Image (cartoon, rainbow, N blue to C red; front, side, top):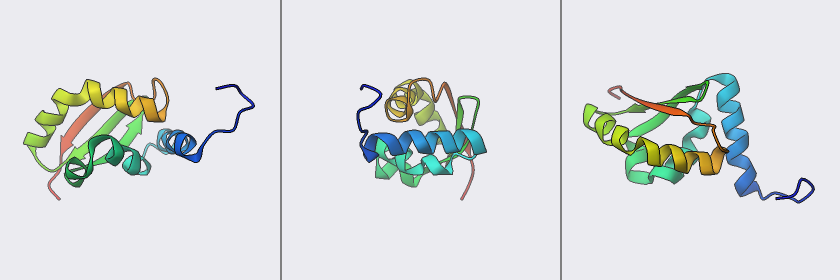
Length: 99
């Protein structure tokens, strides 16, 4: 897209949220983007917790969810970067935290 062309809010908002998450270290702003990538079922069992230096930490409700999502991390990272901007999420970690 050329520099002078208007960008849709749908394309711009995820990148703004990624910038906020990166600057604050808190990834809760990425929750809508995360939910759009993983879907409502997985989103109910997970939440973005922090992001620093390209590392996105996701809180999960069980060790089983952590294992399952760890196996899917490359695909999830790719889908997130399509929305947030290339290279935004370089690594992902899944931490079990009982709710």
